Image 1 (cartoon, rainbow, N blue to C red):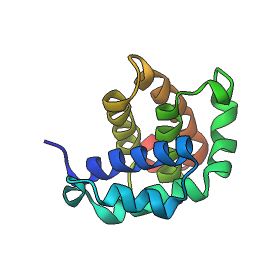
Image 2 (tube, one colour; image 1 turned 90 degrees about the horizontal axis):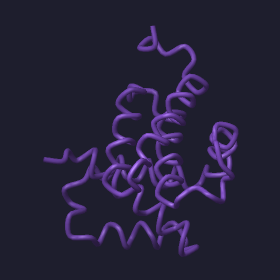
Image 3 (tube, rainbow, N blue to C red; image 1 turned 120 degrees about the vertical axis):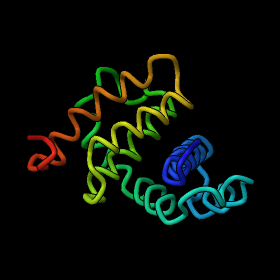
Image 4 (spheres, rainbow, N blue to C red; image 1 turned 45 degrees about the horizontal axis):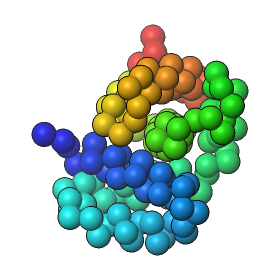
Length: 141
């Protein structure tokens, strides 16, 4: 059974995916996502923070992610890009969530929506990103 927080992360990835592919304005995408039948089972506050935060800071987040990629940014799948943006935002703007939780959730969301080995790629990027964005995290010791 999915937790409300997992659902919020999945919906945030779906929203980032839609906004990226369709070049649709964030408020319109969020409205569409909120109209989905299962939205009431999600943590709405987390969805809002993740989607709007990742969307509005996408250029800054990609500046952190880009040097860690083993391929050109244009070759990222839209799902991998959406998951990486969401997780980067959570790592950088939500210190209350432990980084291992963020990475694990991103892996699980990638397994749900991504390609066969996409979760391995996302895991490798986020492991290195967490070191950069949370160098003094006490859970790292």
